[in-house]
Length: 248
Image 1 (cartoon, rainbow, N blue to C red):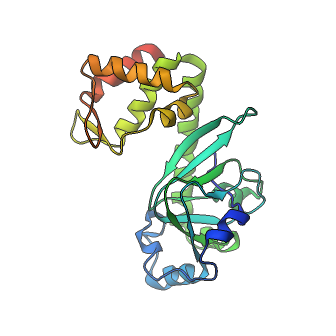
Image 2 (cartoon, rainbow, N blue to C red; image 1 turned 135 degrees about the vertical axis):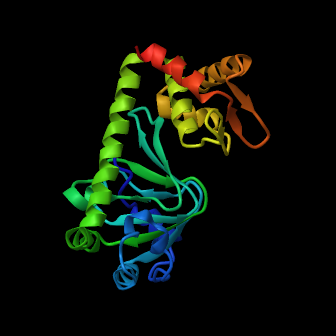
Image 3 (cartoon, helix red, strand yellow; image 1 turned 120 degrees about the vertical axis):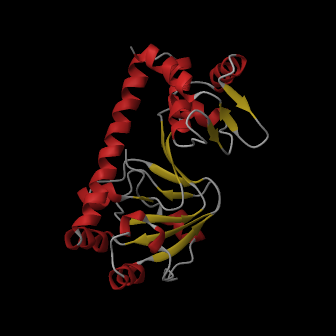
C-alpha cells in the first residue's frame, strides 16, 4: 500500500509554494546518505517546501500526481476509506521518511490518501527528478527497492492477521508491531505518545471497545502498563508468544 499522491487543492492552500528547500533538509534522510554534497544540493534545489495543518490532506487517493514527498517535521498518516466512509489506517509517517514513490515509479494513480496528523512540513520532489536520481545513483535505487520489499512483507503479515486472527488477537498483534519499534531494553517497550483506541481499531478493523477490553486484559495480566506519557509493554516476549500461539 502506497502512502503517496498529492491533493493539490489542500496542499496549495497551506503550502509555502515557491519556497525552495533549504540546503540541509534532505541530508537528514537515509535515502540520500551515500550522495555527495553537489548531488544533494542539486536535488534540494528541485524541491519545494510545503506546510500542512493538522487533519489537512497531503495526498488524495486516486490522484494522478506522481511527485515524491519527504517529511521534514510533524507527523502524517497513510489512510484509506471503506464504502461506508470508515477510515482504515495503514501507517504513520515520521520525520526522515518519504512517501509517494509507487506512483512516481509506475505512473498509476495514488493507492492511498495521506493526511497530516499534526502541523507537518514536507519537501516535494518532482517525479522526473526522482526517477533520474534512481537511474544515476544505484545505491539510492537499492534503498527504494529494500523499502518496497519491507512494505510488501508488512502487507502480507497484515493480510494474514486479518484473515486468520480474531479481533482481540489482531489488537495484540498491532500492539506487538508498535512495541518492536519502541524498545526501551531487551524486554520492555515504551510506546509514546500513547496510541488512541480509535487509531488501533482503525489499523486492525475492529472497534474502540474491543481495543479497550484487550488493553485492560493485558494490564491485568501485567503485560502492559499505562503511564502518564507512554504505554509500557512490560514483557514484549510474552506478548509475542501470545500472538504466535494464535497464529499457529
